[in-house]
Amino acid sequence: MKPAFAVLLIAALHASAANIVERGPWAGALTPTSAVVKAKLALPTETARLALSKNPDLSRAFYVPVEGGDSRIASFHVCNLEPNLYYYYAVEVSGVRDLQNRGRFRTYPSGPTSFNFAFASCARTASSHPVFQTILQNTPLFFLHVGDFHYLDIKQNNRDAFRRGYDLVLASRTQSALYRNVPFVYMWDDHDFGGNNSSSEADVHEAARLTYQEYVPHYPLVAGSGNVPIHHAFTIGRVRFILTDLRSSRVPITAPDTEAKTMLGRAQKQWFKSELLEAKGKYPLIFWVSSVPWLGGQGTNYYPVPVNYSGYAHHRHLPPLPITQGRVFTAGASLPPPEDHWSLYSVERREIADFVKQNGITGLCIIHGDAHMLAADNGSNADYATGGGAPIPVIAAAPLDQAASIKGGPYSQGIYKAPRGEGCFGLVRVLDQTNSIRVIYSGRNHFNAEKVALEFEVPAK
Image 1: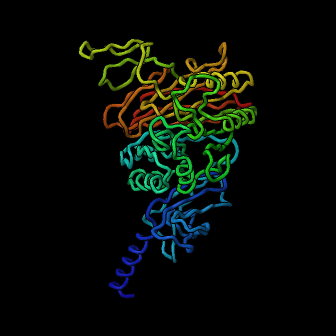
Image 2: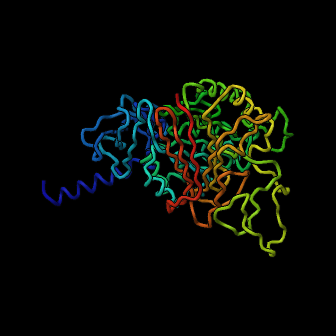
Image 3: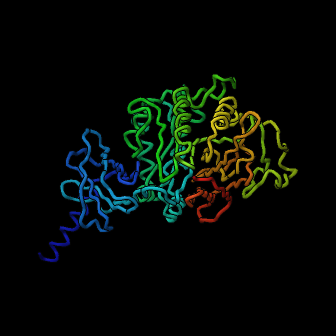
């Protein structure tokens, strides 16, 4: 082959590859032996397949055919993998591989294991903030997005509007790089579901749910497929992760705080309780992804800080308020409007805490976002059981790329309110030590500097 012709051929192949994938690919639903990869193709095609290899250059690849359907979203269900190994992948159409958008994932280890994962919420729509690069550099086993994937606040039951949201985010250079190379786990909150403080009354259910199932490489949903809530669960080693959908069945926040007021809805709450019972004695550590803050009292402000304050704050050692700030808040002062957290659903919160206490559920830890801050509590402020007896550790991480804010509390480890332009995330180390499991939470900014920390240990017999 003549050199000039070879150059032209290579250029033509690259041009062809550039026209294969429009968004993605990204991987999710990882297990020790399987994964799901999705990508939006430039054109729908039944000839697409996924090349996978244990080698970064994709040599000695094997192939997974695309699932049937007329959507431009190509889905690949990968099976028969080996545990705890990196696999590299690329979409291929008509013999041409899109190597520019190749990705990788690491299958989960089999049996008791130690691992790291990252989590966070709340990014400006299509953000390319360097925080996503920092998360990638920490090489977590997976990235858990706990809500507000975008801020489009869609209020119409329109599939194309929700598709546009995913397309915008996946067009971000830094986000797409993270999602190509770290498995993705996702539960929505309000801004990426039906708008600020949205509930079951939002007229978006079918579009939001079906588009999530179309675009996101997700674990099997408990309620099945179609127009259903998106709660689900998965396991790594001796750790169970439970993700609850707190928007699809939620009673509006303005309703009276009685037994009828619920975030979970009857069916999901029954499933959640059964998950806790099944995990008892089987999984020493249980992470519950709540999406919104667990801690807090209605109309209370535990962190009255100066208006433009940024940095670390503790409710017992607050920074002084300047006289020029005007209205001076004190701990317990009334705050308009009511915050969107569990304090407005205090009856159901107490019901859950009482269930945990009465059934001897141990090793439970709550993960949330929504509040634009880093925070952690050792359980000392998170016991809402009648008469006490259910102290639950809480860890929070946000914002990825949004203006900082403070919600709920108090938190035993304090809170960190990021200055303008700073992105935040949580990094969690799970250390399985045979007789116990140790959890090390590190709330960090995009410079990878730790701002809030919490460690605790649960028995693992």
